[in-house]
Length: 482
Image 1: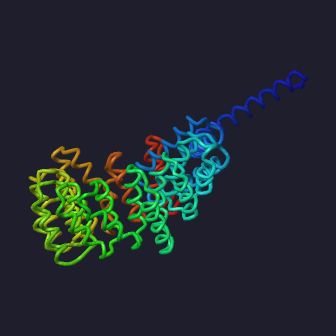
Image 2: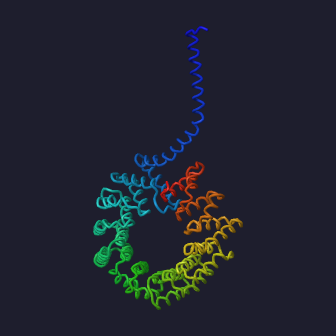
Image 3: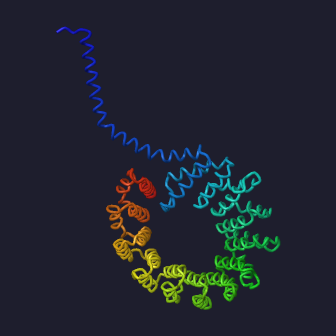
């Protein structure tokens, strides 16, 4: 056979076609897997990268929307610590605020950080106060509030200078921030700030609308220096009720015995709001006169006074109040009084109080709200003992199609810190829906259940539910497994 040029070309072409077909088939087997892997990596990477780009190049509206999304995610995840991704985004937001004067961006980021007590913006916030003539009003207000929330000690001087200027629009928030900052400092910081506030109250004659915040700030410092003035205001029947209430709350925060007389004096006030605040302020104090005053306050017809009595009994772990608290939890006409009574029983937490709480929880004739609050206290105090009982009632609520009660019991279980929780976690992961799986993730994170890492990774890589996937990824990062 003779090979012509045409024949050679035909063979060459045929070989090329065969090679192409072979390569196409070979790649076809690998391509879906490779594309799936690439797509998954792109999604995982692009979410954070897109958010970074929004912070770097976005408009104030786009950045505000991102901050709102981050708030919602953190709230739904109930994160106890920040993930690496969140820290990276925070770093970008800090860098953004260094040079911008955009009021919407600055106030938004300051509020976002302040709500989480996240440090990193202190210098920028102080700069906003010192250069307030060049900043928007909303920015200055957010900066002052932020410094108070993170208790930035370097802000003590600038805040006092701001108050000395007596610019009316900033005074309330500045007083509040000053007290908060001082509360996080040394005894000297607290005493010096208290002395400054007393001098301001005595010699500067602040307007009525600012006096309350000044008194609140004085109590917030926690300094014994402020007790004398606060006690004088609390016991003065001629003083306005709102100022007496602020002084009483301040005396409770300081907790110095020299302020007790002013509180006891306020218990006889004709103003029910002052009475209720006074009895709540008794919590940090001791002695028979205090115990008698708390027990007597359970009989007050004003519901806030009964709430104050329950709060004080819980703070003092007053066992003599247990029968009063049980009565209030079962029969009080005001739901908030019942809530506070149950909370106080949990705070007392002895065997007698636990028996009362168990009865409130397991008796199915009680209102759901009572049962849920009692379950919360039992799981908070003794999760190992009461876990199984909560699970029994959880299953009963599901069987009875009491969806709201069921979901509330899920929330109680999500806060159970005990080594006995693994079986229930496995059950939720194997047969539960989205809500149950989300609860399981909370339980894994809280109890550091590292043995569930494979299941967490499966959820993380599931494209069907992005919120669960994100929560699983955050849980892995929280436990150092990502």
